[in-house]
Image (cartoon, rainbow, N blue to C red; front, side, top):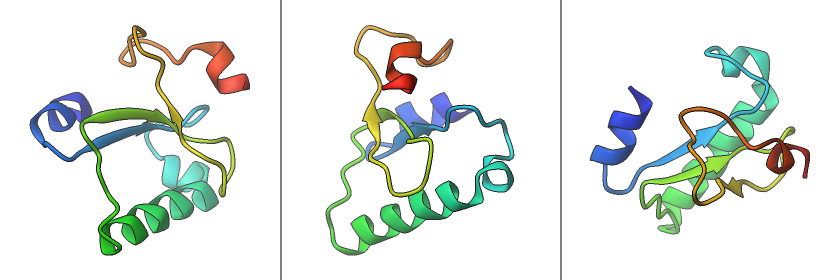
Length: 85
């Protein structure tokens, strides 16, 4: 479902949370809160530009999003080197 939403909403973005499952807001509450707060700040400041992009979330709150590597299939797996970087 997330891929259908991403490709059909022009200014959307998909953020993959490593080492988390469906209930990532319960598994990683600080990270979830940080991601949502950053998104809200960007929207309110008119900085948001999702561009149907795909990102990898940092391991902890406060870190930067990592662009998903071009040429990789984000529906299958996150490249190990990207998560460990």
